[in-house]
Image (cartoon, rainbow, N blue to C red; front, side):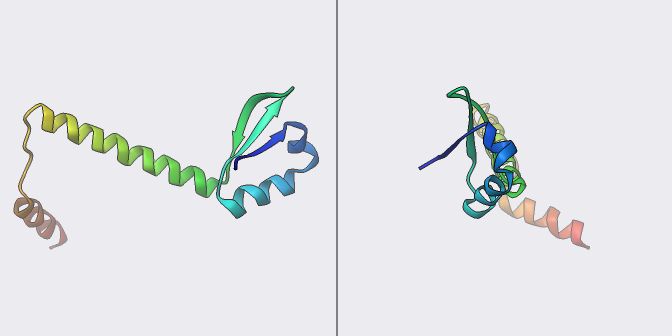
Length: 87
């Protein structure tokens, strides 16, 4: 169940909100005058989401290349290139 807090908790209960964000690694939803206003989360959770978005973006790009007929390189060719970089 999502944690929903009023904006006044940012000032009055900041430590508690910080613990909530880090403990559950989930965002906390902040309301202002009863309406959705902000979402706060730990830096770790933010970085994880950002990394996931980058992966999805790259997967989408790869899918588009495939739809356009670009077959890329074979697995053996990729392994050969990687080995050459390590040497």
